Length: 444
Image 1 (cartoon, rainbow, N blue to C red):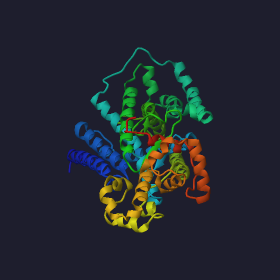
Image 2 (image 1 turned 90 degrees about the vertical axis):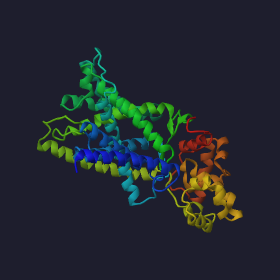
Image 3 (image 1 turned 120 degrees about the vertical axis):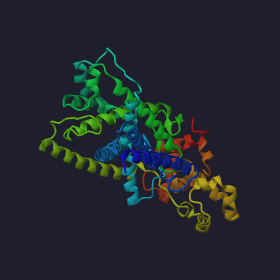
Image 4 (image 1 turned 30 degrees about the horizontal axis):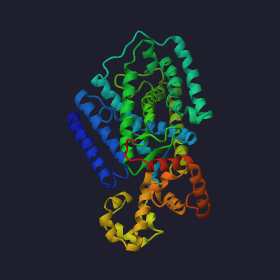
């Protein structure tokens, strides 16, 4: 079977996966609603890779599977690095994550592994389509610019540590300035060296790839059970999907930063690179560089595992639950009756409430409906919903008049008595619940 035929199968398979995933998510069907992100992104990656091979005989999965696997690995490691930053910044949290266990651990790696291949395949498509054709200027970066980069990068790393609420955006660009001079000096692909020659085409294409992928990330995230919710300071009240409007400006430099981070790591790979027709740093092929690369891989794994452990304790706020877990304190028999009829998620029960209510005992209907509405509000989960109920909040609309600090103080007191949450309540997350209660559409 020739590769061109396989590439056509990949395009059909990838596109079909996307269509089925979004249809399944819209209709709250398992596994698509609970795992929208991996289905949507791997489907897109397979489609784009098939398209690149079919049209230009380029790609990763078909042309260079080893490079594809390498990108998957470093993609996960890089994102776990940013998760470590978020422990300090507290700019997002996860809701509706898979139930705790081995699969949740594996899926975290699978999800994060899509970041680099997804962005870089979009970038290669822009290169092949010549969008834009060329961006070249007489203005260049001088030698002083190269010397200044490390100082700028260090400042961009230190300032978010000292003043996270004011300088958190610097995290999405600091490593560009720190690592680009290294890439330029040692012969790797380098945006800095391009800029010194007045060539900006690759940079612009990466920026475009970043904003396109960012839009797709947020589109996949908004309707999924497993999702991230942003809690960045100052911009919590105006969002497009789940992202604050100005937050979309972070995706372009994030793509550039990932490109630079990858180039820096690849300096130790003896000239091998994911970019076609790129030899990289052939000087880095000795035993010293191989040893350094192996140590870097081990360090990356250790960092990722530590990061995941911290995510479980501090960043994941709620997990996917069965109806028995959600409604068990109200009535296990009512939860069982709903399950037997084929309902699985609160959202689909609320959507089909006229039909679902006929299954329930009259005395439980209102309480179950209110619980399901709270649980599905930003997918907060049953523990948070029960805390809110004890604070006199029966439905999401009741949150609109609440003040975050006062509500958090009350919820903390209740939790001390009931012990529903194992982790401390975070004011920004409660503020996100309140703001979400005022939303009328995904575009407010």
